[in-house]
Every structure is written in structure tokens, then in C-alpha cells.
Image 1 (cartoon, rainbow, N blue to C red):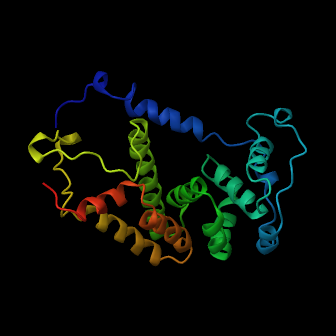
Image 2: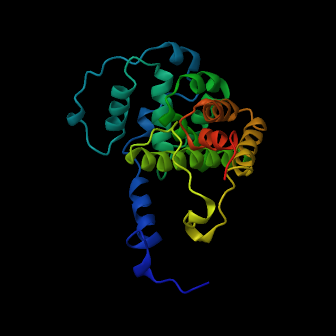
Image 3: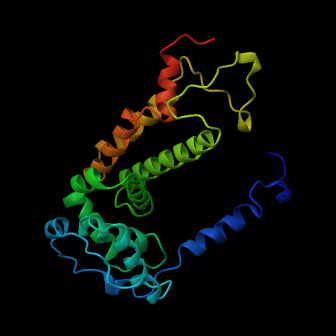
Length: 249
């Protein structure tokens, strides 16, 4: 392995600076515990209750307080169920340092009892956030592994397809294919994926599906997210299958 030269880091400051950045994002909210309902709160009733129009002005609440975060989420989930609002707040406080003791048990209880509801109703950004919370705070190895896999999978699709979008290419449009000898090398000098016969994508998705199948709590989340991958024709996974459906050079 060649010696590491910090001046060559593509992120200035390297991982030391990235870890400081991550640490700032994990500063806990003030008085978060006061915003949590009792541990035995009626989740079915919360699911039926609608988030009302906020009556408080955002700028009237301290910037780093739990009240400010709750109000931000109330604005976002206005008209949705209060279960979704509470779920979002639990994610926000649980992924920061020193979360209230009651936060994670309630997060897991919501997914145990109402997971099928949340999986069907949450927008994709909150599905990803839920997966990341399972990755960080899962109760079982399957939850942590499946959560990390789902979170990383969707984050990388977002990164890859956002760069593609910047070039003006639609996600469901195939780019011109060069002959193998004219194709540039991959990062890290990896062997290129075989567009014609490779099975990397199949193995990746099958392993995630298996992890989700083995844990009933995360299963609704895994099924929803992986079925999105299976059905949306605008992602890199759909394009890989499009390539395989025709003869390649």
C-alpha cells in the first residue's frame, strides 16, 4: 500500500475533517425528552389524527431546541398523520448524541406495530432516514445490516443519478455505448461490471431482500424500498436490465 499523502485527499482535510463534520450533525437537541409522548401512547390513534396547521412562528423558537425541530417537522407533515410526525421526530433525536432513553424503544415499537402503515405512506426521503436509523440503532444484526444496505443503496443511487441528471440525460434513457477498447478505466482500477452477463446487481438486491425477510420489524420497510428498485425504470438498476435485454458489443 502506498503511503498516504493528505494533500492528495479529494475531500480537503480527509477523514479527520469528515468526522468533525459528522460530529457537528450529532449535537443533541435541547429538551428533546420533553417532546416525547408516554411510551405506551396509542399508535393507532396517532395514525388517525391529522397534524394541524402550526400556530407558532418558526423564528420564535430557539434554533437548536427540540421545539424548533418539532415545529419544522409539523410544517413538513401538516395534513399528514401524527404518527408520521412523531416518527420523523424520533429519527431526528435518535441519530444524535445522547438521545432520550425513551426515543429508540418508541421508534422500534412504531415499526413493530405500525410498520406496514409507515412503509406505505412515507415519502422516500423518510424511508431512507428510517433505514439509516435502523443501521445506527437496530435491535438485531439483521436490522442493522439491512438498514445500512438500504440506506447506502439509495444514497448511492441518488449520488449517481444526480450526476447523470446534471448532464441532461433522463434516468430511463440509455447513453451511447462505446466498444470495450474505447471505454476508460474504473476508479480504484476495479474490473468493470459486465453489462451483458454480470450478476452484481442481482446478488446485491437478493441479499438485501433476504435480510429483510429474516426480521419482521424491518421487513415492511425493506419490502417497500426494494420493490421501488424493482419497479422504477429511471434508476441504474433498470438501465442494467435494459442493457442485458439486448446484445452488447
